[in-house]
Every structure is written in C-alpha cells, then in structure tokens.
Image 1 (cartoon, rainbow, N blue to C red):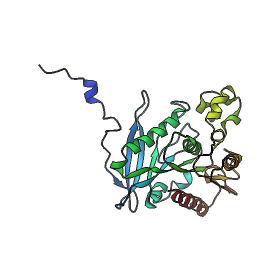
Image 2: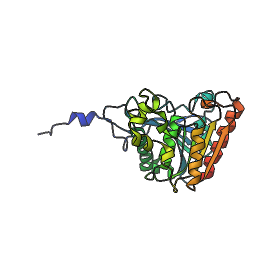
Image 3: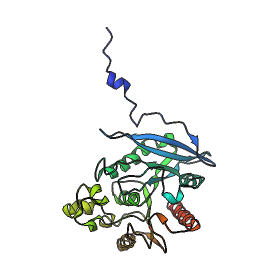
Length: 288
C-alpha cells in the first residue's frame, strides 16, 4: 500500500538554504545580477529576499562582500534603492561596487509595520548567515564583509558592525544615519517609536540597545561616517557624536561632514554625490 502523501510538505517551496539560485542576468558592464533570492522565511511575513550583484569575470579567490542596507525610516524603502540621487545612474551604484571587485548583497528586512526591533537586525544577521552557508557556491568570502547603509539602513548597518556576535565584518560605511534613539522622547508616532514598538522614553533600555552610540566597544571594526551638515531629518550631530565615541574607544573612524548637504545628499551637485560614492567605495576596498 502506498504511504500517504503529506501534501503541505510536497507543495512547499524549498527552504532558502536549499532552494536553487535564480539565473543570473546582465546588470551592467562586467556584472551579473541574481535578483530576488530568498534567504529567510518568517511566519506570517512576506519571504525575505536579497539581490546579489557579482562580477562576470572569473576570480582566483572568493570575493569580499558588501552587504547594503536600504533606508526609509525603518518603515518603507526597497532593497534596490541606494537613494534618490543615484536612481538615474547607469550603471547603477550596486553594479559599480561589483565592478570594483565586490559581491554586493542588498537585503530585505522586516519593516516597522511588520515587526519591531530587534527583528530587522535579526534579519540582516540571517542574510549574512545564508550567504556564508552558500559561500562556496557563490564564490564569496564573508570573512571580508563591509556593511554599508543609508539613513535608517545606515543605523542598522552600524548596529550590525557593532554586534560582537557578527563575524567577518571588516568595516561599516554609514551615510547620514541616526546614532542615538534615546533622544526622541515621548512621541509614540515617530519613526523611532514605531521601530521600537513604544516611545523611546517609555522603553529607555530598548532605545539604548537600539542606539549605535551606546553599543561602541574597543573591538569594533573601522567606520566611515558621512553626513550632510544641513541635514534637516537626521542632525549631523548624530555622526559627530558617534565618531567621538568610536575614537574614545580606540576604533578607527573617518568622519566626513558635507557642507550644503541635506538628507539623502539633497542640495548637492551630481559631481559631489559621485565624489562621496567614489570615496566611500575606495574606503571599503581598503578594508578588505
């Protein structure tokens, strides 16, 4: 007699650690893209995916990794977006990073309407773990990882770099990100409160735990902090204070404040945005 079939198991998609990789598509000169690769499944939440840009040319050793974290006030945003000032670039910024010799993973994470802190940080750890598990197949060396993020994504990238249980992170590129969530006070409708699940003043320990400023330690990897001096959404003092705290701890840190720049490099000429991107990429290359 034939054994009964577990139909739920039969029809379920393969788990991310065993699912076949999607076919690669051209994504710029010398770069291929694997789009929408599932890396984690969370009950009741959309599948979490990442996009992976890789150089087309064969390499003699595994590639270093840039893990990019998108912004959007922890509430919105898309993994393929590095900011509105770079949306018109052809090739795009991720293809340019890959062409310089990195594998680039840009990952989804749960937004504040789906789950509160520390869920997004857990998701990014899971993305790194998935890449490490399939590193041989992908040709990536996760022991040479630079995390890079902008705005809320920069905040998460900083937390990831400061987490002592995140192996392999060699550096963090942080653009115009908040570093201290304890400052937001009693508001319950702010992006910070929605991210934390309560007003920061009501959950001071959680707000401190979610603040890179309060997580600095002597073993932290090098940081590059870049922030507009005229930022009207996240004051430049966030990066200045984080740079000072990292320096006090003995961590290598480079701080670049940009005159005339608002959030997301608004107000800058295209040439200066290109310069910030180029300098950030060169800094990342020096860390690996």
